[in-house]
Image (cartoon, rainbow, N blue to C red; front, side, top):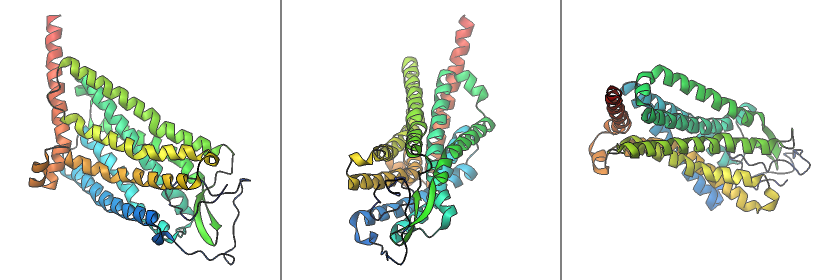
Length: 350
């Protein structure tokens, strides 16, 4: 298999890192003196700028969400969901400078442990984010279909326990990234690459399992939940306010748009011999940047989905975020209370 030209992003998961016989071949430092060319390439510079913007917005934006939802707002089931999502994005953003440094230098300088750990953070973020979105969708669906039960059973303690389970599952599914990462030498430089030589099917198994467990199955569940919610509300004619679903719909759409290109090119790369090498590498670079962008879009959506545009700029950042998160809780509570009273009347008639 051919080597990728001269781009080894920490979080890119393509595998042009070993020869056709499946063995990685080190090259002596004395033979090749590598010089970074990233800053001379338009695409590389553009992706670097995007990565820096993602880091700045994602790091400070998610830190703000964590501060407000964790310390300034009353602890509720809703704030528990969004706090966990913000923590996931924040952790990912803290590791972006490693990727940026690696891209500029085109050489891995952070050692074997970080080679395994840093890329795993990306997949931890991917799995934890989508599973939290699944949990929130199921929570909304249950609240609408079984309002009385939900009102009695939805507690912060239970929500926290569910979040812990989601994180444990995400950590377990991120382990393969650490297992198959390795440090080697190529053309006079140290690189962090995916070494799938333990088994000829390892690469395919990992890529397909990530696509199914981290994208397809969760989205099917989310779509089913939202279809049930839409039909239930439409039947009961209780769609006066769309605020409870604006933020969630935007978060889900952002995740879908940001992660779909990445998964598509990772699957195409499994049969790399059938596609143009430059198209695959470019697609994977762009797809990875789009996936990273999801980490800064979430806090932006928290802020700007709560009220109309003019009111946001007139109010403080704190009140904006409180509105975005609290609106959902207030409207859901009103719906639960209204449904509870309707169920009570119905049982009296019966």
